[in-house]
Image 1 (spheres, helix red, strand yellow):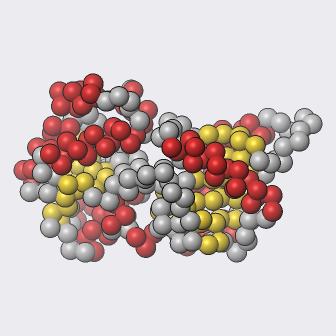
Image 2 (image 1 turned 180 degrees about the horizontal axis):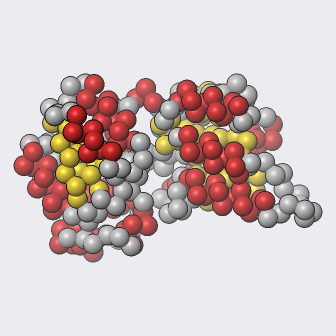
Image 3 (image 1 turned 90 degrees about the vertical axis):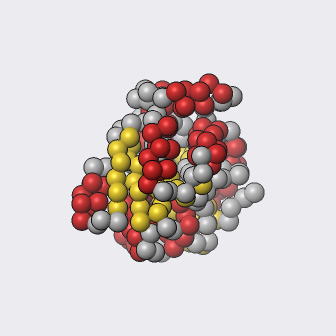
Length: 284
């Protein structure tokens, strides 16, 4: 089978590419100029079963035409496309412009869901990226040597309530908490930048009297009706390094709904830094 891969930024597209190739699929990559790592061309140069087509963000018609000419009937999205690009770098073609004008909002779910429907109408089924990466999904339980302590568990409990409410509005999927108080909520900037912001805020309190515990707890959830075809929660090494710099001591994710990249190295680094990571059951 020829699999279409709509590649965003980061390592996610490469992990999916490796998994698809391991299952014997030919892969047609739609690489986004504003996002995809040029390393994708070097991968294609040494593997004739990988074909790369570079598209600009907004070229929906060309994406469809490329997949149809290549004989692609199933495709996956992998890698982030920064939401803020919609309001900056994007130059929509006629098809995408028409789609954007028809949307009631431009939230991630609404926009990508509409794109998925257009692809489906053209005979290209968008499938879940986790179909190829199930071993990378977080399993339920404490994942590090250290479990969350009592204060961190209280932060998680409070953070889950806030995170699920925020995720329900498709604003973001991460909140950062200290002493059962919300320090930062993720929006367009992404998880790591939200953690950085929380760290700077807490550092600004140094030397001042405060009832807030300085340690931060990061809570990341899936959306109430998470569409696993796109916008899957992901944790990678960069998130752990950002937590260390921000003085965040605990991370909570949802089991079966969060991809852990470089799992062994990530957990080892977390343990070295004294960070507790726990995967909790998904709340409906």
